[in-house]
Amino acid sequence: MTEVNSIRKILKEKELDGILIFNPENRQYVSGFTGSAGYVLISEKEQIFMTDFRYIEQAKKQTEGFEILEISRDNPVTDIINGYKFKNLGIEDDFLTYEQYLNFNEKLEATELVPLKRALIELRSVKTNEEIYKIQEAAKITDNAYEHIIKKIQPGMREIEVALDLEYFMKTQGASKVSFDIIVASGHRSALPHGVASEKTLEKGDMVTIDFGCVYQGYCSDMTRSFVLGQATEKQKEVYHTVLEAQNTALAAVKPGKTGKELDEIARSIITNKGYGKYFGHGLGHGVGLEVHELPHVNHLGEKAMEAGMVITIEPGVYIPDFGGVRIEDLLAVTEDGYKVLSNTPKELIEIPC
Image 1 (cartoon, rainbow, N blue to C red):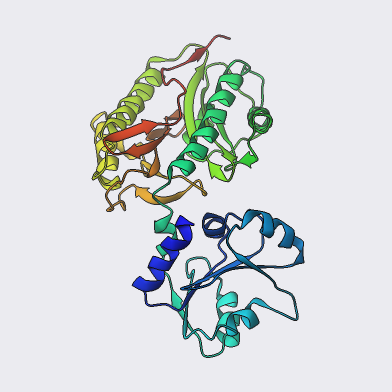
Image 2 (cartoon, helix red, strand yellow):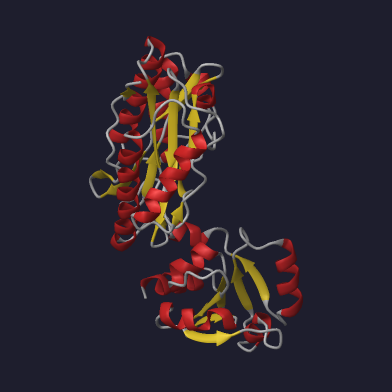
């Protein structure tokens, strides 16, 4: 398995005897296991999956190439690890709680715990073709859901009704769940970048922002579109087209070698030059995969150059208190010579007759 070989490279680089993995996304990435409890133990020779009796059969079906060991009160994971007599063990310090650390530190006899410092999350930032396929399938479901909901939206609906309809539709299309709480923000609430759907009623004249995604075979999608209920005002059009220009310009600049910080600056400069810089307070985007927010950074922290196989979002926004806001977000894969957009919903300003 390619992922196990990559873990063994980390073993050699960090001079470790073993690596213990139980962050759910890292665990699934390495082993294929989708259950909620289990540990992966990788050494130079062993690849072991440890879980309790609830998941033994599931582990046998999903973790090809792994030795399956059952853990219990009488046979805890620390006892199993002690049997290998590791001098040191890599741990996910960015996921481990302090209580878990104290427990491992006390019960792992003569084994030094070594922080992996996000090495596994960095490993996941470049996707395989299979991973990109799954993300694209999730994006297709999201596109279809938007096409479905835009035909139904009308004044009088509550934001929460829109969100529930989207979630139900996506699950009928093969999604296992939403990738985050669906954002439906209308009118003055569209100035809230993370305005999760509320009881507010949609009204004629509202700018409406919908930000949503789903999970397909473990992988996430993420897309945002904004539109107007009724005829858009000149101010709404101006804000919308400012965001659209920033989004399209940053999108066109995506290619291997470009950093997330550089992409952020491209979009931000356009919005700032139009006089809306103070209303764009978040980063331009983020990586997407098993988690909806993961590496690489696509913001002022993004010093790492883009690589083919990375999947990111480009999502500038402008949010004006007491007026409303606009965000336009696409999901894309970085390719050898540029990018491929995975979310294919049109981006022209929609004015819904009402």
